[in-house]
Length: 254
Image 1: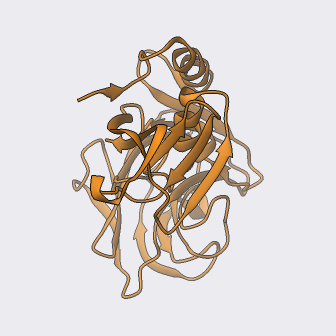
Image 2: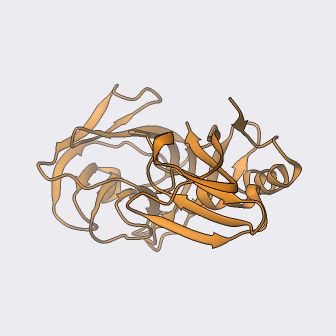
């Protein structure tokens, strides 16, 4: 079994090192950024915080109030098909969970939870249609908000914002820091899946980076002679592969 990791070839190593250093604290593998008081959502996908098989998210925030986190179905969608968690809204007097941006609250928690001078740690989780938020570094402990949705949104992306007179500083875990690709089969390609994308790339390493960057991508087939990259959104059995000289097929291995 071969594992396709950041040290497999020089090109991939260069690409990923530049990416990680630019976006994270290299010692802790965290994404660190600031948000203004304009209440403009800042996409975490652009910083490598992705949702693949994850059902929870941990972060720290320093803000006087109105720290917003969006759990989104669509990339950079900050209005509908999302859950919005407001931490320390209304001058840090209460927190709420909503089913869309700036709509009516589903559940509320009274009391101060954020700080102007100190980072406060929080977690969020989703699973079986229940969205939860709590304080501290242990998912499931010190829960402050919980809502079970009879028709739950799919959660594919994350975003953060502050507003209404408050700016913020954030530290998020880098969810995909250990993402790898497992070699599936030589001289074979896959053209299946509900979502597919085919493009010409620079190399097999470039194909893997394109797959890594696409939230739906679960694997790719690459042709070494033409540098064609076929990405797909499911994990195929080897029986679903088509014999093709010069192709290799790889799948995501979390």
